[in-house]
Length: 321
Ligand SMILES: [Zn+2]
Image (cartoon, rainbow, N blue to C red; front, side, top):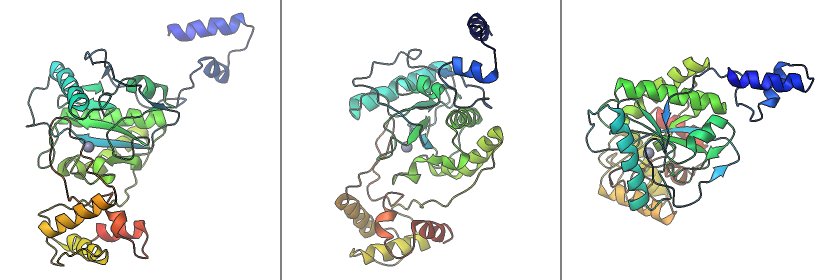
């Protein structure tokens, strides 16, 4: 490698002994992993997809992200254009939507993964900062958690259908690389709904997160651990979890039935509670708007599970009902 040779000459010129530690130090930017296990994926940068400049300063936080968060773009239809050109085009479309409709300074997510398996940089500087392995580009993709989360938008709508194999493979590789760069273990790979009351990343893709953690763990040589998460309940749902939610809402004074059916009064009660507690819908939809008012998820459960049980107790209780 040319760079190593160059550094070695410098070291010898300085009369120093070349040691592993000395060489590392001279490289300056200390790599996150002394011996990366994962090859860097091909990421098409903002320059390569001809991004518009950001309209504000990109915030680079002086710490690593804690969570790697999986999203879906909810693009209309799951298109069958698997080309690189298409991947670059959706990167521009998402940026336009986030800047012009959402009013954000730039693309919200750090990375975008196409159905053809092409990965592009989202927010400016995300790739450069990830490669450094020590800092975090603050995005806009997980409400109230953007300082902790690095997010990947996966092109498509995965509520009832599965991702393409190409998308899956590139997602595993990208997440494994991010995890390796930052020293993040597989249990910290999450879905958007693990933070906000949203359908994202779609039920089908969400159901595959344990498999994703296992696949990433295999790349890294780390066993994946599963932890209970808050369930997402939405209008039309029925069953014991809905009944539990209704009882908890009644404890808060809401006038809802205890029939285990997530009907209009339950939806209205959740929406009213969310509004009164300042929890706004955080759907990150890239190219469409869907009403998720009254969805009961990760940012609502802590407001109603106020009994003596801990959050962890509640999560495991709900996971088994
Ligand atoms: Zn999302």
